[in-house]
Length: 275
DNA sequence: AGACACCCCTGAGAGC
DNA sequence: TGCTCTCAGGGGTGTC
Image 1 (spheres, rainbow, N blue to C red):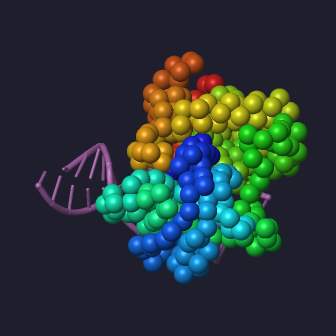
Image 2 (image 1 turned 45 degrees about the vertical axis):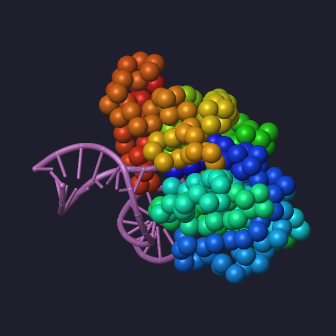
């Protein structure tokens, strides 16, 4: 579910709620998420330490603690974090619960358990989780440019949509935003990367920054279960122009939006506007 | 390199 | 009401 704007919203929310607070305990209610969670290690490395900040890298949330420890949370399809009073009853899929020194708790909920919680040393980049090591540049940072995209796409035959969702190329774009970005850039999702002109790359980069920026400002996209740390839904869903709009008229030219399958996932696009 | 198929898992919604 | 089927925002592996 959550892509960059949702992860960013959650990271900001966590930062607001957790900064300066000490972790006093960790409870694990499942043996395994995507990977088994090492409860002892998690407890040993977090309990007693204060939270310095929360930030985002790609779709992952990083919570930095004292003494160079960081907790990485990958949200997967249905992962969410919330901060609430400690005495609030646990819900069915709250798997990892951090008790805090202010009598609140920070909880990771994930019905499908495709998410991940991992602890690592911030000062040992060679030991970072593989997932973090593999990530490409941040799309909202200056390093993601028309030149970068143009260079990386040369001599590639992959479809551009698949390419944009490759976390090693650019970090944080998932299925919803890839569709929205290409619609706004007027590029057909099936276009071979290598066929993109400099201008096309420019349009994609520009539209990436614009779409992600607007989605962050709207607090992300809630389709069904995504929520901010305080339980509020994102407001970007109403601004989606193609995603989930199969057969509905294109907002620009009224041609029916088409749905196709690419790499096993649904792609929505306007066959008229996107070439 | 890249296209697939398939895996992890639960829940929502459609159709009967 | 209840069953079955399809689909879902992610990511990894293995095969051809």
